[in-house]
Length: 279
Ligand code: FE2
Image (cartoon, helix red, strand yellow):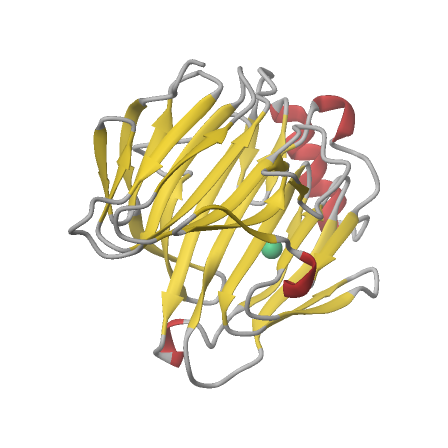
């Protein structure tokens, strides 16, 4: 078994999006423009309503998927096709925007902690104009397993430790895991060879990735291999790690804000379609 190692370390940059939601952009910023097929990773987390209350009013998406993982808080989702849903603590929404949706993502709380991630996953050229699709996954539908003492894994996507995550039918065959490791605990996680993969520490202090240490709020781009070894040092606090992998598309990317296509002409078309109300 070839263990993956850290090839790059990236720290997110503070920014804001939507109507002024404060967040940290980890993928999709100058230091790490993308990690094919992943286009963007935002971490949001604040217990100050001013940082999130403005939310994300109506905005379009075409050509990719958005994956929202709510750790804490409540967010209401509504789109121009009449779909609506509430993302609660511990839930996941895997939205395939395909040929286009216009939606809003608004906090349904006026105080308290709002925390989570949004990941953007690219679609292959042949899938960019498919019909939009939602997978709204309630907290209880996400299996939680303890493969070894001191490690709990929530399996959002992928087949891991004898369970299969609820996200289905996604072309890049994603692995999406939330791992909680106690001090001194260690685990080996199988990851498909050839898939792009990253690990991001979002709670705790330091986590061993193989022989190296990864710090809090540090993202490790991983080398190729078929497994990753994670461990928390005995003296370090418990940690949580977001571990994600997906098959790269290796296609040309033309990107403009919420439109991700293959050519500049398709971007122009997307803008025209959006303005003409064809989403
Ligand atoms: Fe959105």
